[in-house]
Image 1 (cartoon, rainbow, N blue to C red):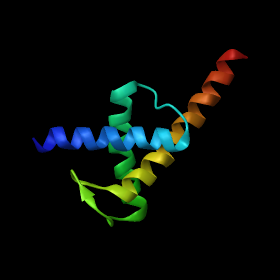
Image 2 (cartoon, one colour):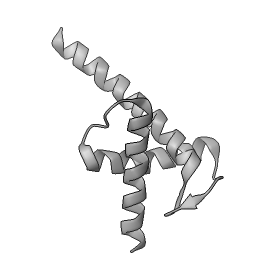
Image 3 (cartoon, rainbow, N blue to C red):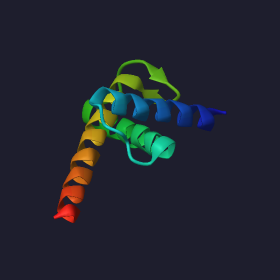
Length: 86
């Protein structure tokens, strides 16, 4: 049950990062889950583990990390799209 809870929280974190930045996470639900997991890792790496812990994620660093990840991915995808259209 803990793994399912982590998937749900990871998906919510990824979705929330996409909503805050106003950019879609590529891959739909799976992309949101991956963005949540990788964002949580990145946020914890940069900011440490503080704030409320839900489903194994420190929420504040996880959301900040996911926002950073979504911005980086959307920047790279935008560059790739503009390069392929040229």
